[in-house]
Image (cartoon, rainbow, N blue to C red; front, side, top):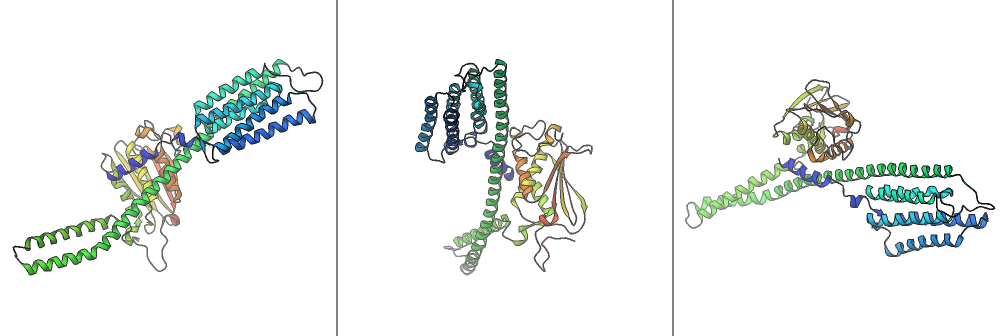
Amino acid sequence: MQVQAHKGRIMQEARTPDPQQSQRLRVNTLIRLRWLAIIGQTAAVLFVAFWLNFPMPVALCLGLIGILAALNLFLIYHYPASHRLTPLTAFALMTFDALQLAALLYLTGGLTNPFSVLLVVPVVISAASLPLRMTITLGIFVIGLTTALSTYHYPLPWQGEPILIPLLYIAGIWVAVVSTIVFTAVYSWRVAQESRLLANALAATEIILQREQHLSALDGLAAAAAHELGTPLATISLVAKEMQRALGEDERYGEDVALLRSQSERCREILKRLTSLSSEGEAHLAHLPLTSMLEEVSAPHRDFGIRIIKREGVIDGPEPVAKRNAGVLYGLGNLVENAVDFASEKVFIRWGWNAQTVRIEISDDGRGFTLDILDRIGEPYMSTREGDEMGGGLGLGLFIAKTLLERSGATLTFGNSLEPGIGAVVSIVWPRHLFVEPEPQGNTPVGTRA
């Protein structure tokens, strides 16, 4: 029960990503993108005006570019390069960028200007770094600017008579720009969202593994403390015993000496329990035969009304013995816990090994995985079973288990059994040389059985 509570607390802390932290844009990133835009806009205006000699309002265009440069300088002097903008501030800056670009296009031909496609850029940046509602708002605003530019604008810079572009062609440009905005924004948001969820899930995995390792380290410290205190406590107990023998039934000190001896014995019992908590205190406890590992990960889940049935599979050769690994123990325990959560009455654990591989199979008699989820199984923050009500159906626990086990060299396969009475099946297979603790020269691994 304590293991369950410990896992529950960790999963609750790691379960939901903080959008305010994961969706913040660095000011230095925005500044660099703006300098690129400023250089490009300036080069285009100067090339058209002084190289091609097309008539255009150069002063107004350079003035708009200067406003963007001034705002960039303001950001440089008022924020450190590593500062992360709040979503609302970043949204306001990108709205201004879209408005500045629209004003520049207004002076240079509107949608007939080939550079009108750059209206897509602020929306794409927003989709990659801002919350969805802000991206939708900015997208609607830019589509509105695109619509206005299709009708209201200065003539396209050109020598001689202005070019008369058919309305149908302008409508086609409008459709192209709007569809590009929608497609690229949806694509960028989807990719960025998956990247954020994956980053948060991996961070949660690291936190959980680190805490498991800390617990193992505390066990080692407890054993070391028990070992160090054992000698002086034995001396105290021996002296108290001799004093009690010498004093006999002394009325003044006999009772106090008896109390001292009883309390020292109590301390010895406490230290003995501390020693038993550690997996590092004794060398043979730092290694786990496969069957002992399965017993350790399944034991905390036996008191939930679900029978855990162990089955021995195909066995060929000595039992593999692995070094105790907090990540493997946590991952296997999480898979067993997931099976217990969705089982109707029984969970089955089957194991086997040969000279090449070590295999564990965990199954239950529940409804199994739905067909639409099997292709995406193990992704973070998604439901893994039909009717999942545990923790909101985020699937983070399964992702963490999969990640930790794969780091140890295992290959995981998820599916549904064809055998009657069995639902979901998770198969974990290690190459034996990755699972087994390397043998010292001339020694036989502890716990190996022929």
